[in-house]
Image (cartoon, rainbow, N blue to C red; front, side):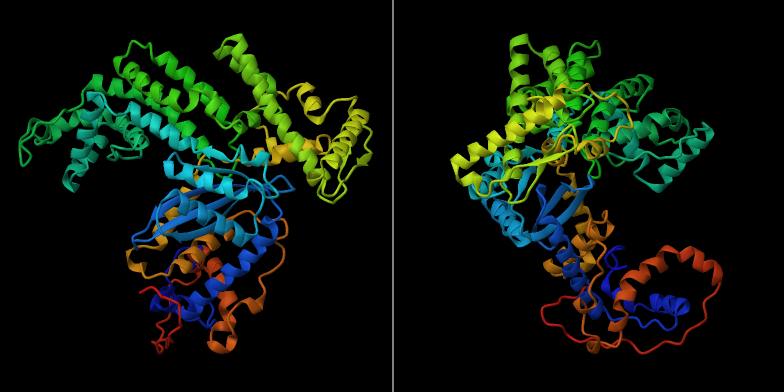
Length: 610
């Protein structure tokens, strides 16, 4: 309840909860808030150890972001993404720690400390937003860890910019100078939402026009294009209701003419042609809105989607730059300048975003080459295609070396099904052994696949048929025995998140937990509540079968209710879930006598919310 439902510690001592619990299970002894807070920390530590045993063997992709809470504290969130041996994509919040400031060096040091605390040495990418401080943080991480074990190509591909953030910058540039039609609709929505009486009149207009749309209009945040999109999408459904407001509300026209308290004239009211322009704008914004949703996904693979959406956005803006509609044409021209700054120059993009498309068996290198040839001249397209293939081959070569220098026998599965193994311990430190290893691997591949490497063999195979319900992780799971080394590359590349939404969304949870009534929560408790909630709600890890050890919880002698803590943390969630079903069996609750209040004791270092 406290962790998953974000309830306060004091809730366990409220009279309503105590009566409710006793009606359901009279023998259940409710623990005190001190015990609950202590055992939340114990559960956090127990779950952390379980996660630590799994994640220290993985190569992870990271996302990070910072946040200033209403406690006047700066928090940094670090989230890990990886695909396990069963080809299941995982996302876990590793840390929500305080930092002194938002400087790049400070963020870099915080990331380094968090990774050392988890025992993580193998990092593939770090996705951050476009702030200059993040560039400094990435440089710090590269400087500190590029020569350590587990790095890939000395961190050449480490830095990945948040695609959703860049997309937002592009749209903000286009929405700087909005058409008067949008402003008229915004003013009309502001009038309707300015008082309950006006909203009631508007609802009456909706009923009179027999509009079936169930939603209502909401005022947008002018600096957020996606909220403007949502406002326009709802407002155009109520075009007839806005038109009827002129007859039903005597003050409606006066609001735009400067009558009343505000003597300034406003644009409006919106007419038929204004809503027609809004619909044209909606069609344009819908493409960006849907792309943002795809980029923001945290529970599915996104790295293989970026290239497709990039091409689609570029085609749309080029088309609209010559549109007859002045509003769309001007918007597209302004947006194209930002688009060219961040995305048109493909040399400035992380090559992994192209490699991810190549590792999608529906497209491979042929699709990338086709798109480049469609956008650039033949020579430039050939050069870009070769660069992408070169990055893929370099990744494959490193993973090939790593698999042979791990000290474990790992064989390349041949077409006949037999395993041939070659292993040299410490080859990365001995150039002679490294050359021998590469020669041995080359001979194995020549024997097993007619002289072709796994990369060449994969690229030469026909592409899979295009279909919407294609599970790319399942495909690689099935074919990992055919391409054992390349599958390791695919597992890491496909785990790369193209946005920082996974970390940014953490601050929504943090904001609810650190609400105005709970600003006294210690930063360690905030981290424990946020991280444990994420871990409990996530997909189970491969070795998650082990139970939380009982001795990790509080000493039962410290409080009369401690023996029921595990029951409370797990069982009460079930009680809450079946609240309505239980209510049917208890139409009335007996009037329980008030019991003596719990006696709380001070616990050094623990701050309890009021």
